[in-house]
Image (cartoon, rainbow, N blue to C red; front, side):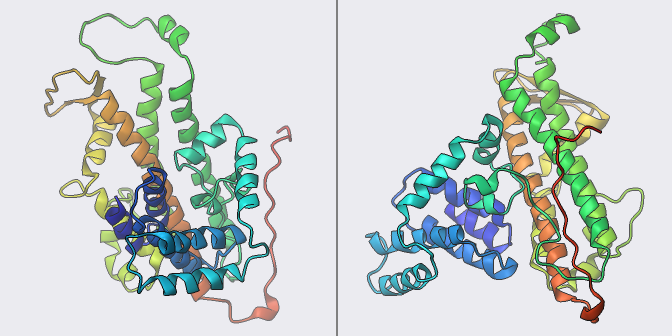
Length: 365
């Protein structure tokens, strides 16, 4: 798991890498590499996105302090890690880390069950939430506009991002409801025929199926989003899995860590040899053929028009697809922000600062 996280970090897929590092750390393993590489990931993230907060510094320090205490770290290396820890500690407003943890736990406990679930499952669209569960992770405040100066029409792209966030929020709610909402009354009223075919058919499974389809819809919209921003060719068949190939020369001429992450994600979904290529097969079956969800004990027998998937495998894959889609959203935003930072406007005298406020959902429309 640590090696996989390291590979994802090298491909700038920070949300997925940090998710794995955190998972290993929660298992209380003896290996300091998870802590060290997590700190390295956060430092690289800060370097590329200029996102250093007091909490991030604290989290980076934890990695170096753990390495200094570990018997698995060579003694010759420990002075370097101690120097890093001391240097970072000098940047903190307070050197006592215990109150910070207490306050973070208190803020986390005050959130709704839904939000805590989103944080636990790594489904928030919040950069701070990649490494901390405090109150700063209460809302999905991912934006294109923070710290960016540009002559481009950023409001148009922020509108695109709003649309992506809205659809991802819907997927997340449907997935949450499939876990915690009782649909038995609705299922009874729907009155399906008993065919003894073992298909799992109910509102809960339909929510899962809908989530799977919507994730691919979001991915395809991200492809259109990137094509619009980078002035790439678009046709009626443009999708996440093919837009890079159609614009390969332009995209690979750019030095942009966010685009490297996007390309890595695309390779993982390749139907021929991608790790998650079968997701695309399932999506096509959901959209164009027939896909049945069945109990884990079911003896699978697929053909060209019928696909059977065991329910536990589908659910596990769906959670991963949601986290994969989240990573693609982050990477798209990072790719655009990085490009904007590489192309500041020439005429700073005529630039105008724009402040974007968050919607007030107490309003009635």
